[in-house]
Image (cartoon, rainbow, N blue to C red; front, side, top):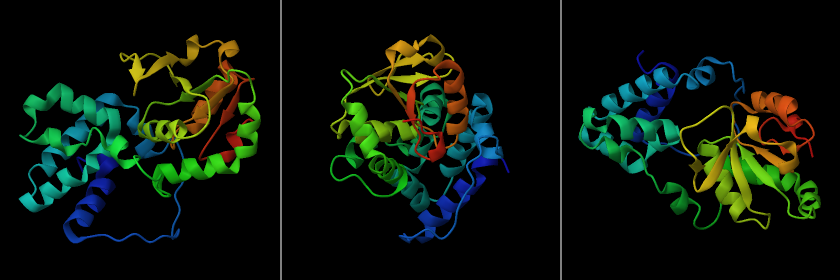
Amino acid sequence: EKAKWHSDWLCFTSIALAHGLCFIPSPITGFRLNSKSYGNSSLLKEKEQRLVLRFMVNEVMKYKDNLKQSFILSGAFTIFGSAMEKLLEAEIDSLPDGSGKLIQRNWIEQYYRDKIPAHGFSGVISRRMKEVQKELYSLKQTERLRVFIYGAGLQTSVLLKIWEQSSFPKIRGIIITGTNEKTDFNGYPIVSLESLPHTEVDLILLSSKSFESEMSSNLDESLPTVKRLSFWIKELTRL
């Protein structure tokens, strides 16, 4: 119960690492993208999210050695991105010994060093870019094309790696809503949506599986004429 909106993840991941898993290369179910769902809406509550992550870290570090080591070796907790990193940085002294090993800080570089995987975030991003390649290459002809990414989460880290391997212009910056104590994300400058003039951006890549609809609404208000590419809810694309 204390794992709350991550209880299914903790349950399924524990079972998989304890007893094994297999990959079925075809869709056998579906899921609903809704930013107002229990899990997604709760992700925005930073204090509550930290409490849930803290509980799961303590829980996993109490597992039997074999299962605990599987969690460490798999880097499964890395999926929680900056929220997990902040927890480990701020509260590492009060967490069980070895908790810092639960995430792999350089996994993006290692994972995308060779061929881009066709599954997960990378598969969705790659397929979507292929679907709109004509429009993207048409935009590429724009002199000094100014491209930004809206969103600063796990998907953005993956998107940056895929974009860097393409022939498109370098990303100018990472857009966020509101303010943030950090000034850069993976070496790219962070800019607030509210401070970005429409004259300084040609294309925005939406980078959030859960919040594309909210991002599009924000852009309709702030930057209504700027072109944008969505990866999950395709009808939100404006190219």
